[in-house]
Length: 105
Image (cartoon, rainbow, N blue to C red):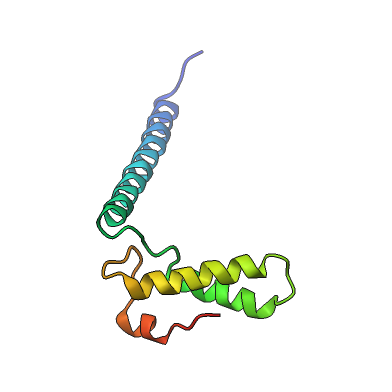
C-alpha cells in the first residue's frame, strides 16, 4: 500500500494537533491544581464555586425546595459564601462587590 503525500501530511497534522491539544490541556490543568494546593496550604480553604456556578446553585435551591438533595446544596452554598468572606485570595474571579452581595440560603 502506497500513501500519498496528502495522506501522510494529514496523518502528521492530526497526530500533532491531538498531542498538542492533549499536552496543553494537561499543563493547564496541572497549573490550576498547583494553584489550588498553594491556596489550601496558605489559607487552609478555597472557594469551591465560580460566581456563575454559585448563582446557578442558588437558583436551583430556590426552584427545587422539596428535592431530597436541597439541604446538601444549601450547606454547600453557605460554605462557599463563608469561605469567600473569610479568605483574602480566591481561586475564581470574584470581586469584592460580588462577595458583599452574597447571602446565605
